[in-house]
Length: 122
Image 1 (tube, rainbow, N blue to C red):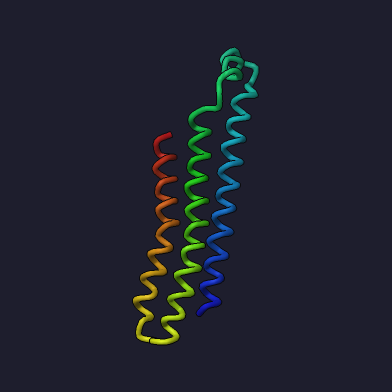
Image 2: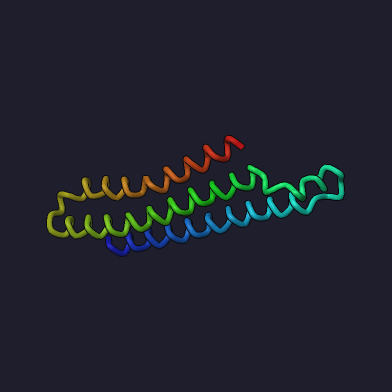
């Protein structure tokens, strides 16, 4: 069972890093594309303007999801190994230990919900 916890932790960390990098890349690409302009007069005025709020929303959503997933992976690693140690001593604690692991996994869900809320406002 400890191998499953390690796989879950690695998966959470990898997903968090991928989402973080993808969101930051998307936000930076949007900001650069807006600054480059299309040759239109309105686009020339946008070159002098700072990156848009939409670009910062993409960055904020990426940070919320990525950091939330990384934190969930770290939480599951400590809670999961402690829970499996308790199950090794008392097998009847399996159901209760899964609840603690699920609570630690909830951190990633909260980060995802915050990202959805941020992107819905844009």
